[in-house]
Length: 130
Length: 130
DNA sequence: ATAAACCTTGGTGTGAACTCCAATGCAAAT
DNA sequence: ATTTGCATTGGAGTTCACACCAAGGTTTAT
Image 1 (cartoon, rainbow over the protein chains, first blue to last red):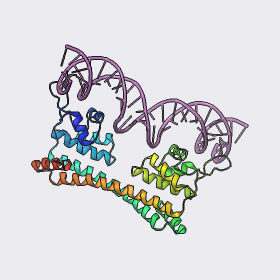
Image 2 (cartoon, rainbow over the protein chains, first blue to last red):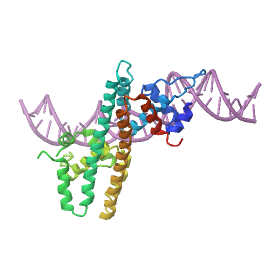
Image 3 (cartoon, each protein chain N blue to C red):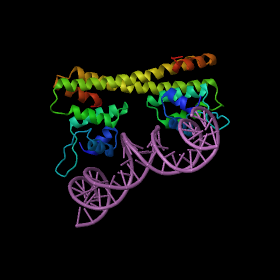
């Protein structure tokens, strides 16, 4: 598949695909005889995955670190698997953080009419030590 | 509370606090007789909230929109409450998106040893149409 | 065979969200 | 009273993650 087709398939720009490859979070894509990129299924799996992780808020920097390790041929499947587990933990943490904000919002919404309570709640929301 | 204390309390830089105020997502902070900012409890509630929403991926742009509406004195509590509910929905959507990526990761991890299956799964993960 | 429509690269530009800096004023310490 | 330190502002600089552009080669259409 050529770059334009892939870009449309995954709803990213061609520039983004070239950028991701250039900084090393996409593998080096095979070229045809005239130098055009030919994306394989393997490449597209990475595109799918990277797009999802970017969408979840992972930085390019973090992804570079991850794929550098992940694609290291010296690693066995166990180590690689544990990298995935680490990555999963990052996402779980992210969800937990957002859920905390959601709790805060839920409380605010539920007690909106009661302004005294609201004040007390907001006080509690970030002051645990005192 | 002065700017340095507040910055440390919420783990943001002083520059960021001034920036947030300048673009309008923090209320105009009261000054003491020598022009120094004096943060109130009310201000700090906003700092807490904005930090959480930024952390959850809300853009400054979106926050400007939100607070402009929210702080509009002409609004009654019902409208303001519905703004919070909208905001909550945004976060719920965000969590849902990350959870989808988590499902993908979970599958990858669970079937890591079986490379054939892995390939099939990755194929399925983004190809629903065909 | 010429034009239109792709692809390539290297490099520059852009917008968001800070981050830093210089000049200046106030405040606390010695 | 002078040094040290923290505050202020306006404005310039930085980083991230692309987006855009020009110059050139290739493929497809007419």
